[in-house]
Length: 261
Image (cartoon, rainbow, N blue to C red):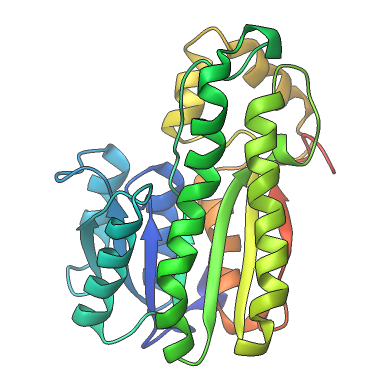
């Protein structure tokens, strides 16, 4: 990532879900490029190994943490206000949060209909909250970058993914539409889509559970090999930097060749 060094000096980036595997890698990449990072999460005391390693490698002057629940509108607005009050502005917002509800994969006929609306509102709805709360601050700064994260199930149809796929597809279409709306205000909106990312808690959970065969199949199909968190982070860094000044409304998959859609 040396080629990106110091490209984000004097920029303030908010990374929601910044204590997780991908989120922590994104924080580290942005900090390396000179940005001031605020990581946000729901836990008052994040204790993941990824977060611990990040705190060891990034100075306190460069990295801080805020507690927030982005599924709640008021919490999102409070988060943005706190970031701006502490750092004087906001230039990039990256939503790496991994909001999941068990029991929504599998055959559609076996999913409890009472959970449909909650999930479809929960995951895209959190992104809606984040963007709505961040926009006034990005506009005041004269522009900036929003990076959403989604899963390839929103791009490539697969059995047993009808609910999860629909949710991720909603995120992707929201990103495309919002990008066109905000382009005249110099705000770029893009989405990073992933399948399996090897060195993450989610991947470890898959490989140690009943879905192990799916992870093994993906690894076999990935001609370039499954990506690591830092591979995803480098793309996130690019989407926040000057090199992507004319790139908006895009959904970019980082999956090592598992699929192309």
